[in-house]
Image 1 (cartoon, rainbow, N blue to C red):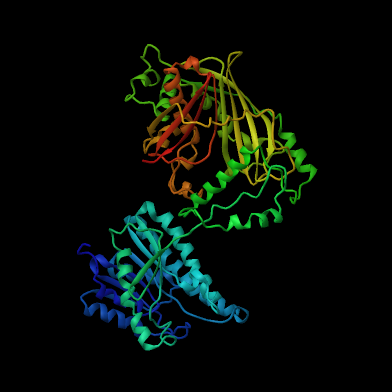
Image 2: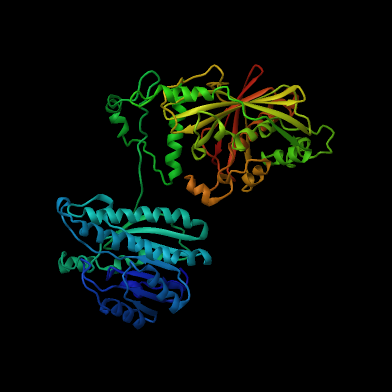
Amino acid sequence: MTQKVVDSQSLKVLGHVPSNYLVEPWQRKFKVNDLGGDFMGVGKGSLAADKVVEEIRRKGGRAVANYDSVEAGEKVVKTALDAFGRIDVVINNAGILRDRSFGRISDEDWDIIQRVDLRGSFLVTRAAWDHMKKQKFGRIIMTSSASGIYGNFGQANYCAAKLGLLGLSNCLAVEGEKSNIHCNTIAPTAGSRLTQNILPDDLLEALKPDYVAPLVLWLCHESCEENGGLFEVGAGWIGKLRWERTLGAIVRQRTQPMTPEAVKANWTKICDFDNATKPQRIQDSIDGIIEALNKIDSDGGVSANHTSNVTSTATSGFAGAIGHKLPPFSSSYTELDTIMYALGVGASIKEPKDLKFIYEGSSDFSCLPTFGVILAQKSIMGGGLAEIPGLSVNLAKVLHGEQYLELYKPLPRAGKLKCEAIVADVLDKGSGLIMLMDVYSYSGEELICYNQFSIFVVGAGGFGGKRTSDKANVAVAIPNRPPDAVLTDTTSLNQAALYRLSGDWNPLHIDPDFANLAGFDKPILHGLCTFGFSARHVLQQFADNDVSRFKAIKVRFAKPVYPGQTLQTEMWKEGNRIHFQTKVWIM
């Protein structure tokens, strides 16, 4: 702890009243807000806030009072700004009770709890948010309750608001992290105006706010890295809570629809917490769904849910997309483009044999074979998917599932290729559809390379279409034995920023806000970037970087990779075919 920390004595008052505090602990400056009403939110007065301000001043701090309701969040914050010029900490502690059994809760009982306990914290925090972002620092505390976490008889309105605060806190922890704004939640058991008429005096003394304030002080300190945490606290005890999730069960089978009977049959497994996971971010949830989809697809596809309301018109509409040709386009590139791509997929002067890919003056300067996907990707990146007749594609729900690339001769070191794209097939995977997009690239009349993009559209399945296609280039399972060779490569923190210069401008890979909206902690690496790393490893290990020996490659994208992580490629040689899998390597 540094001298900037407010000692616990100065902050004992935190639990005395259901109020919101905007604190600058580094300079012992406090703005104390309290409307002064009773535990049901009735009445108002200045006595409660004034008493706290007086106590702070007695102990050497500076404090000002504010008597507005937390529903006037801008006024609450303005008082602090006018007095001290900045805001470092917001402690949302406002709360009232209107306890009723569920059937007796009136609209007024419900609404006033949401306005004060939940919306009040939102309004005060929102008023302080931009100030914290500009100064690149902020600490926010939300005050939840065990009632909200576990439920409690007669408090449906209060429970809903208090658990809502946890959801708000979790979101702010994600959004604020890049601006050094941390948001945590406490669920205190303490004596206050809310409980003074409920608990006996001896218990109120044992649960006094003195035993809550030190946790709040630490969470608000500039050196505390905790963010997005939930803590129960009271009587000198502190415990952290976290989510736990069972491994679950896949209840869809290849030849059967998903049914309630299948759910019942797997119920024990669905609810079995042995070997449970502990998800911390929304991406952990998304990863689990993607993994399940990969397992389902690897079993040969899943029948459409027969309970879906599917019409023949929908099926024929999707069938009408098959064979649609996108407008032809040209892809020109120079040696600079091929060098930029090679650097984007990890080629480096640290590996002497990579020089042929990154130095145009090299006697055997070559274009990496996987540069062929860059030439073809305009069919996907250029908005052509939205123009396919009979196929309504929400681009926000498009995932790159698989990729196949075949070369008929090595790519020239520079050139101009004409590309033709066609929808080869549309498959119904139940939870989504898969579109197979074939792209042929020609130099004059000569076919140089062929790509097949497997595009998964989440939520677009269940239209009664076929599940498999003889036009799909399928991945082959890896051998059931230890790999013959393993190579590792550490990606740069700038890997995605570098790779995107080859033409994939999706903000998911560079913009933290966009990545957060998509459910990721931070921007992720392009799937085709890891694809390039993998192919480069195979080429280096088994072909001595001779591009003429490269024929074709097929990959399936399973999980995201973050820039800065280390990739490990395991490889098996069987005849003239190399099997491989690439995963994040953790030491």
